[in-house]
Image 1: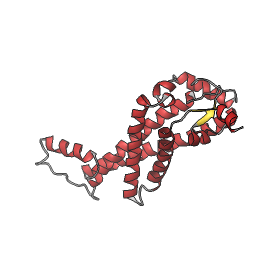
Image 2: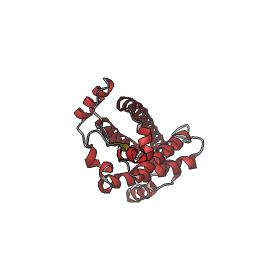
Image 3: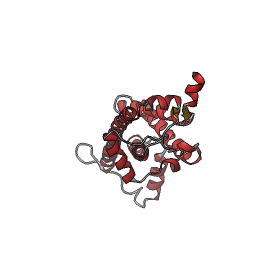
Length: 217
């Protein structure tokens, strides 16, 4: 019986994809929940997210079949058609990423990149820390007025530098909140697809295995 069960499934998600997925879940949750109360923890969680993005981008070109971006390149119309079929419980099953799942992967990578980049920029502006400080120092050194035009604060302690920091913080929070919305939609899609296709996609992301029948994608 164990041999028959193994033969009825196929390895889809490699260890790097699976471990990276759950590390990202934890890191984003920690970063989102510690933004104001524990800045150092927030920063390190953000660096973990950044490391994941870099590794996943590389793995999307050199990893195994189902990890490669080329395996799940669908046009938006195909993704919309899949979603309509999913709502009607008639969507075709895919071994790898479904069209909607593929769009979510790219959307999340984009939003996470924006979240990390704006977070690092805000950290450099407000605390003079992080990798973006090198860029800010170079920009300041190249500015012809860097030594002659100090920042003058407005009433209430709001100078140009503080306003720029505040705006970057707002953009960072916007990216983070949009990412959270995508995550909620992603979870809803996973639940719906698990019901329609009668298999646990969460368990598949733990074991790496799925039923062998279905689309080659």
